[in-house]
Length: 177
Image (tube, rainbow, N blue to C red):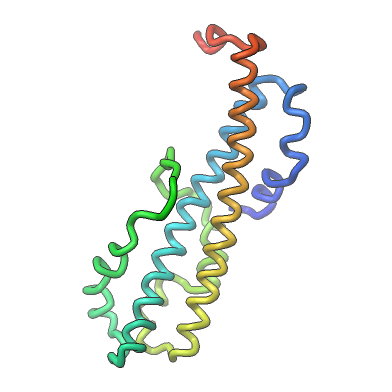
């Protein structure tokens, strides 16, 4: 996603004076944050997959094994990608499991390690693999932090909507056609 959009949503002023905003605007803001978070969630899964693959290749070498060739790497993918399928802590179920249509979403990740480069990991030296692990780890932390910040915004917007229903400022009947 364009970083400008994410920056706009994460700017502290984005949530400014929620009480004065119309309920429709609050709902739109919540949906916007949820949409962007879904894109970040997708991106995070891509980063984690690439990180797992690079770390597995580095691990093979630490164990004294020869670098992987593309065919053996493909054979190892179910084990590599299936070992860490449940994240620690409480997660939030994504509302959208489809990849976002925005090609800019993966541009920074591709700049670190393009998906097509994964088949050439056997030709990368150990120091470069360590650097890739570090860069992917740092990027995963950045994306996770952005997601957490969006969840904080979503929670604040939801809390304002809930407050409005509890206090009678809004009614469920207004949602009915």
